[in-house]
Amino acid sequence: MISGANIQGNFKMDKLSSEELTNLIKSVFPCFPHDKNLGILVDIPENPESDNKNWSQRREIAQEWFSALKHNINKIGLETIQLIAYEDVGSNNADLPLYATIIKSKLPLFSGLMNEAGKRVEFEYVFNNFQLFLAPTEYSATAPLKNAAKKFGFRAATMPGFSPEMIPALRIDYNEVSRRVSILKEKLDPATCAEVHFIVDNEKDYKMFFDLRFRKAHLSPGRFPDKSVAGNLPSGETYIVPYEGELEEKSKTQGTLPVQIKDDIVLFNIKENRAIKVDGKGESVEIERDHLKREPAYGNMAELGFGVLGDFGLKPIHEILLDEKLGFHIAFGRSDHFGGDVGPDDFSSPKEVIHLDRVYIPDIQPRVSIKSLVLRYENNKTEEIIKNNKYLIF
Image: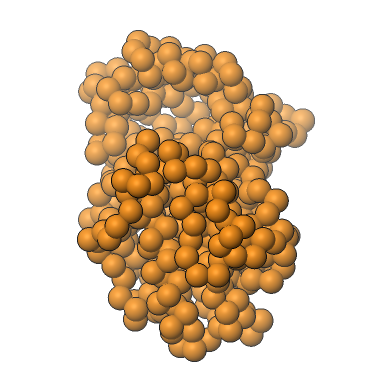
């Protein structure tokens, strides 16, 4: 880790202009009469040693956005914009802490200084008093904010791992993005299964059968025109949770799922929508085998995601917020925030809760290719929607 003393200072980075930022907020959150307050949620490192350059840079971006939006608050049509900080939760999509701090001026360097930086309040107070949120955090808050949005009626754009390299993704044609993710939803909603044929190193074949019964797909078009919704920004995907067997019928999801992690090929043996065994050779295989043994819920097949931003010329930046939107991906772990059945109580502790995406594009997994992805329907009709890593439906 890099200490706080080594990461302070100004960064040269691509920035949204004040006008671009104002227009982005108005586009992302079409205004309702009751929209009064926007909160910018930021997680703060527990101590300086746990900080890193990207995290510090992200907090600087949040501070700059707060200042710019506050200056243009009349153009946005809101009454209040606040920076709201909370102690980091240690893992992606873990539940938020009980308390947050409404910052007076500057974000603190680490969480032990938050009481001096503003007013400490319960998160329930925040959710009751703010209608809109941006969340450029280190650890993804998508899952807890999705669940809280349904309860409290706010809208939230979650931006875990946001960096200046993602700014071009905020400038693309989101009308076309919306058109494409809508087409994918139309294909996925009536599908009973997805059959995926993988090829590793251009010679080894592996197949997966994903049970899509009892499920509907979700859109993530980068716009939030409806109440009680939280999702990623930048965005551009349609996603669906495979059936997990919570009803009387067992899940039919099964097969061998290859994942390239670093230079290793990790083979997950899947049965009834759970990874039950890990095969292969290499350090990554041992790490995954240990993780699955320690946390069986990690092996849940939590999401099939169909990102569309790769066709807009965007490239991976090694931040999952953007990278997963570039193409097809499969997530392990928590699914309740997407309408699935696996949640925090299925893990051994809050810090072990995880929703982890594996993205199948050549720039990220060059040894693994999608030869074919076929959707199957009740009338025995089939449609191939991906062939040789390319969509066939746009």
